[in-house]
Image 1 (cartoon, rainbow, N blue to C red):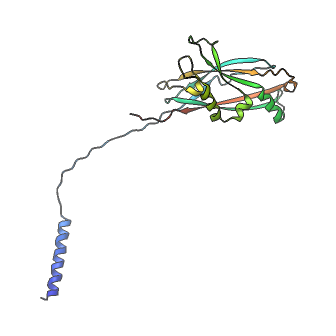
Image 2: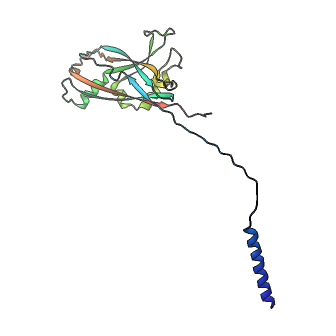
Image 3: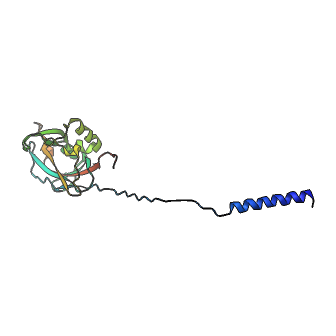
Length: 219
């Protein structure tokens, strides 16, 4: 047999040996552990009671009314703060349309005083005006801009000093949690004739947007 044939046969035998080693069976120790993880999201649920709060006719400059209504957290997550969205439309009392200028003028004379209770004994007559805005101003501000103004003037929250728009509404283990929201509506008195504002009707729509608290580490 020639040297070339011997070398070729040797290489083939070596390759076959490696193949058998590589494809052979072998034994080893092993173990496994399985972990299950669960992530469930909560619910954020805000509502208002009553849904219609003010229905007053025959207003004149200088008239006012205080109203207290409830903002309700019916979810499982704390509401960190509440943003207020304002819309309105103004017509004649019989429903006829009017100019935008007149509608805006009327809305500029309906003032909202946002109130909080500041008395240590919780009496309703001990109140503080957080901010005063006309309906026109509220419509033309973004809810975020209004929230920043509230945050700048509202005192630190406590049992007797709580402003729901900035302090939010705590969840109550899946049960409803309720906080009062108090405002005063007043027809601004300018000590000047306002005859052009007679026989008008303003329909106000407030939308309350509850937002969650900041994210945090959970155990």
